[in-house]
Image (cartoon, rainbow, N blue to C red; front, side, top):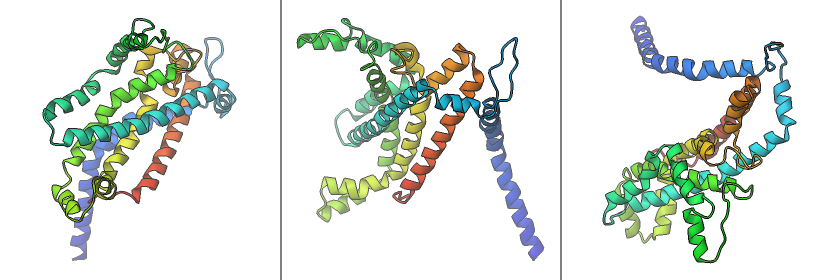
Length: 297
């Protein structure tokens, strides 16, 4: 009898490994191997035709920490994430609540919200150039009606990063709305009816029932928004190219610039490793902090 149970356990374990093998192969090829390769590359110096690469240990990381540009770009990315993540999530929830309500032309409203998401980031950036062009853009044309002069939104250090943030929020809110909309449609309407019968108002229902039930979706969106705050750089190529004077430069754009414009791939690898470490730490904190507030059923 014991041998039969052991055989069944081995069979189920083998079956589980067979199911997990395709995912493990893909993760090994496209996640684990590149990560280890990048970490190893970051421990070498920049190679040239006359001077080959040499193992220098953590010198690239020390150079980054002592580089004022690194701290400026990191601060830009921190501001970018702090602005885009909560605003995008809040707008997505508001739009999902409205799109899920019983309103006329509900399908048109949903399509209008989701349309920016379907546009490639390059196309969205080109579209926003018509808004930001000094003197000729939509924003300056509207401002001129109130006697406000033209503003170079993308060419000033004080406004360049904010202009990039607005484009990101406009692009991402509709994408996150889809997840909230799907989650809202899984909530039984009986809960709202029961809350109304108990005398709960809209705010009480939202705070005590709706938001807790949406926490798994919120955690999923939060992690994706965090990743997007580091990986979205397409619009920078069109709008600002990280300028002026690094005012709108973000970490991933600086990694690309270091690797393919300055041809310093070890330094770019060190930057990548630091970004991965920070993202991992923040993701773990998010999961630990929000796990207790999540209701999966």
